[in-house]
Image 1 (tube, rainbow, N blue to C red):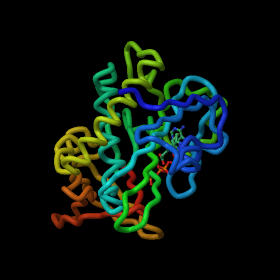
Image 2 (cartoon, rainbow, N blue to C red):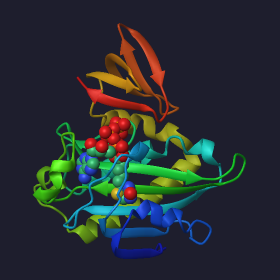
Image 3 (cartoon, rainbow, N blue to C red):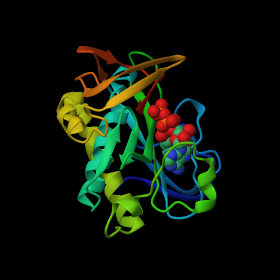
Length: 244
Ligand code: ATP
Ligand code: BTN
């Protein structure tokens, strides 16, 4: 069945727009914008969201299992987006732990999961995705890391409507699958398309920098880092992964 869909030309943030309406939204409601004045990433970072042909969308989901069960969500949504883009003609799309999509070592898209809900209650989740399709050059000076567009990754770019509809559909299917089987069904799929699998990386944890070889994720969604043969599992929102 068809989700509630709201199309907005200009908004602060599609995530914020849905967060403001929690309590009034049906599960699966979607908001899409053409331009975000305050698009955001993790921990207060900005998401550049100019007018043009990029996608900025968010969806609301009610997770009966509660906030604790939401930990692996950015990972499963990342797998869903990467696999969908691969099927739509961009075979080299990869995931980067915990919330990015990469193409040829550059950032193509980001996922932002935000939530409310008390321990023991259902979690109210807003899951946002920003996908660069064809970034206007004027907006790019603000991005302080290597980035790219889907137009570079596809021989024949699907229309924006097809992309949006297919991605929304696959994200919703994946959220249902996650409710049924949790992360276990996704670990292998993630590791198959992990941009940094078996590559040297560093983890930035506050002021600390830890170097090692990335070994994919485990059943809890933790990043596995190999430092001289010792494997340590890293979880949590304060960690950033970088290639060496
Ligand atoms: P982490 O690994 O911790 O997720 P990150 O640097 O990717 O680190 P995020 O919060 O995930 O941080 O994403 C925000 C960052 O993404 C910004 O600080 C900027 O470097 C980059 N960025 C912002 N807008 C875009 C965009 N449209 N396309 C690609 N990258 C962007
Ligand atoms: C990241 O890489 O940190 C995540 C970026 C998420 C950007 C999307 S665009 C749609 C939604 N609205 C926002 O303000 N952020 C997300």
